[in-house]
Length: 271
Image 1 (tube, rainbow, N blue to C red):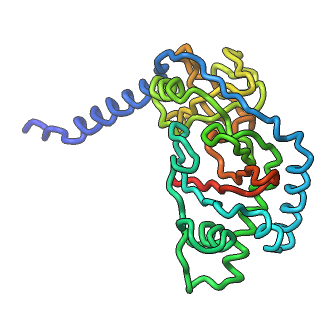
Image 2 (tube, one colour):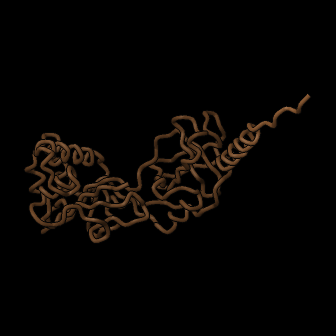
């Protein structure tokens, strides 16, 4: 009786098993230790009555699609900034790309920055341009938190922008094996568990302001609604709490001009 033909499927099966084992090993292996990083906010401007009154007027104007209050509030040297999504890069005038230059009316520069990447767009009707501008302004002003811009002296931004050590943040991202864009900030005290399940054992706790690397390569093995966080000791903790904020939000920034608060910059984020 002739010998059976050699199987060609087995090498593929073995290779597939090896790849699966490597992927599983990567997902289960902890990252490297890193020094904890905490962010801080300077919220002193939140108590300024004049700024509060301006914000109230601008929120109402955004809701009613009234350009008048915004035009009156914009500084002559207003700039629309296109800042990096990476929290490791500074975001302020002279430190980031300006959209639409500095010529013309401030209100026109802001409108074009929001609707059309800073360039006139005859294909988009004026009403649609205004709708886009007011939608973005309304959502940004609804953030309610406000604080000093760590990258631009004298500016305060809404939402509040965190100040933190970028060099330490870079080391944390590298140790946890994540991109800088995956760094988040804990908005409240957040317990972390040893596995993504209710009733799992707590292994760490983040304080409000702690930076948290979100480990996305564990997504396939993490149930929906849970996220994996790389911890300073190299382990991974899990949580289903919605307590994490962006380090690099879009924002609207204010500064004083002859004693009056003005809109001096808007911040958009590229990917």
